[in-house]
Structures are given as structure tokens and as C-alpha cells.
Amino acid sequence: MSIRVAWQGRIAVLIGGGLGVAARFGISLIFSSAVVGTFVVNVLGAGALGYVLARLRLAGQSRSVTVPLLGVGFLGAFTTFSSLAVQLVEGPLLRSLAYGVASLAAGIVAGMLGLTLGRQA
Amino acid sequence: MTWVAVVIAGAIGSLTRYGVIGFVQAKVRDPRPWGTFVVNVTGAAVLGLVVGIAPVGWWVVPATAGFLGGYSTFSTWMVETIYLAEGGGAAAVRSGFLNLVGTLGVGLIAAAAGYLIGTWL
Image 1 (cartoon, chains in turn red, purple):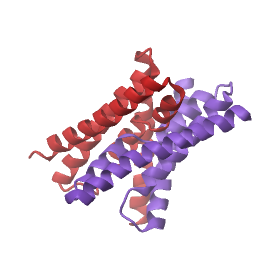
Image 2 (spheres, chains in turn red, cyan; image 1 turned 30 degrees about the vertical axis):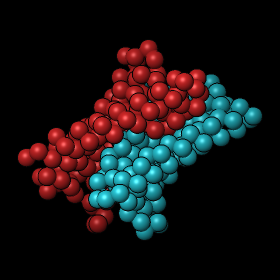
Image 3 (cartoon, rainbow over the protein chains, first blue to last red; image 1 turned 120 degrees about the horizontal axis):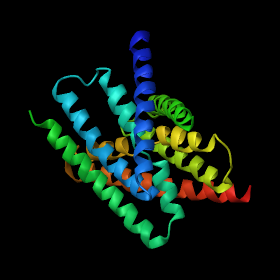
């Protein structure tokens, strides 16, 4: 990778990541429950990332700057693992069990749905 | 003002994730997503620590929702898990399942350990 391309990627992650965090922060203000907000952004983000990556691969654009900008940056930062983990540890056992299973199941289903939709020509 | 700090911290957290994932993947010489595992587990540990300490100040939300939210990622974890499972055969499905359960399990232990250490401090 040339130095120019490496810097392009870093700047794209910086910009995309800042916007992704802003979007998550904005959505988190809509929901009165932090757990619901985290669940919504995580599932939406997993589906969108699957779609975007499949779409770019289909178009032969897997090495374009869109991957660090929209994939690694925006959608990577839009979702969060650290909040999920701490909410699971902090919460009451039964709620955490339901929240954990629901997050993983919905995240995988959303990701598969996004990939499948993105792979259609 | 909080918004600006959250966005800047989130952008830096995203770039840190990009750097750590690149560094880890180059070190392990294994196509499996160890980089994402490392950022998510360390992000969960540090967020647990901060929540345990419960500090007060203008920097707390930028550091947690901003930096650590941008640093850790749920979407990438989901899509990488699906990619692993799609590899073909029972071994691939096992590998995907291990990435899912392993990251969650170690991430929860990391968050709990960080939280406990934080409450002792």
C-alpha cells in the first residue's frame, strides 16, 4: 500500500468514525433506555455493514475509499461492543440474558439479511 | 459543546481501532479476526473500569460514548462472524460460533473485571 493510500484510509476512518459516533449519540438521545438505544444502533449497523460490504464487493470496489469511510469508519463507530458488554454486566440477570441473546441473534440475522440483499445484482 | 467533544473523541477512537486491528492482524499472521476481538475486549475492560470508578467531569461522555464507542464495534464483529461461518462445512460454522461466543464471553469477563477494579480504586 502506498503512503498516499494509507493516509487516505486513515482520514476516511477519522471522518466516517466521527459521523458514525455523532449518529449513534443522536439516536441514543431519542430513547429513554440506553439498552434499547444500543440494541437499535447495533442491529441497524450490522445490517447496513453487511449490505455495504456485499454491494462494494459485487461492484469490484472492495479496495475503494468507501470501505474505510462508510464500513470501518461510519458503521464501525455507529455500533458499539463496549456499551453492550458493560450493560450486560451491570443489568439484572434475566434482562441481561434476554438482551444478550436478542442482540446476538438480531445482529447475526440483520448482518445476513444485509449481505444477502447486497449480493443481489 | 459536548457534541463537538464526543465527535472528535469518536473520530480518534475509530482511527485507534483501525490502527490496532491493522497491527494485531499483521502480528498474528492468521486471517481470523483477532484484531476486532482485541479492540472489543480492551474497549469493554476500559469502559467497565470507567463505569466502576464513576468519575465526574465534562470529559466522561466524550471518553465513553465518544472514544470507546468509536473504538469498539458490534457491526464488524457480526459481519466477520458470518464471513467465518460461510467458509464452508461444519468447521466454518464452528469457527463463526466460537468468534461469537468467545468474544462475548471474554468481553463480559473483561467488562466485569474492569468494573470491579474501578469500584476498588
